[in-house]
Length: 277
Image (cartoon, rainbow, N blue to C red):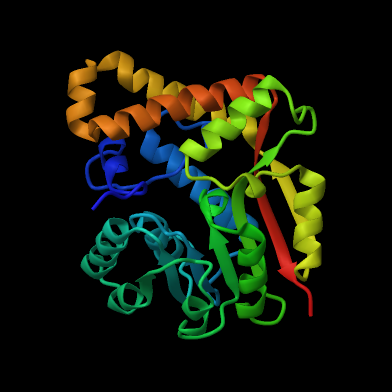
């Protein structure tokens, strides 16, 4: 069965790791390290601690779940992921690492399905979405579901794309952006300017909203990493490791992100907000 979100990222990682995000490249030079750095940044912005009950919306292959449990030592994790292959991989990863309760608390499901949230073991102190919310069918609906699920004064934290204030709607660059969004399984309605993003959070019941632009440490770094991978290895070798569809996806994504950053079309931000009661 074809899945857009599959296990192709395994070939980008060091042995034993299975991260799958754009990474935070301020210091890191290795893909696995950069991905872990982005997750650490999100966890710190969310304010995770030993009392935290985390709902991870889009947990990938499970590395970030282990980070919440082992580095931040949160009390509990639960979550949902649309990918069958990634959910299966993450479940095994948690079980093998000695976290059977966490392994049983993650499910394969659409994050925009209210039943996913209703079935959660308990209300969470934190809802996290690491480098995935732009892929959700409806991000505003996700905000509303997250707020409903969160405990009083609960925190929402995510990393996400926004449309740059300098970008001109209707331009040739915008038409190209729309084409790329469609190919990347991203709803155009999810890519909005900072002002609109802020208003969407406020209108769905969040306050104390903080948006930090980290584009310079994410977009060009990921592009360089993929370009370096392809330069160091013959295309045939990379294609065998990642799969030809994966190779095309990553090369196209890296070039697009480099272009979108250089032309000030997209910005990449870390966002945190508190449930307003």
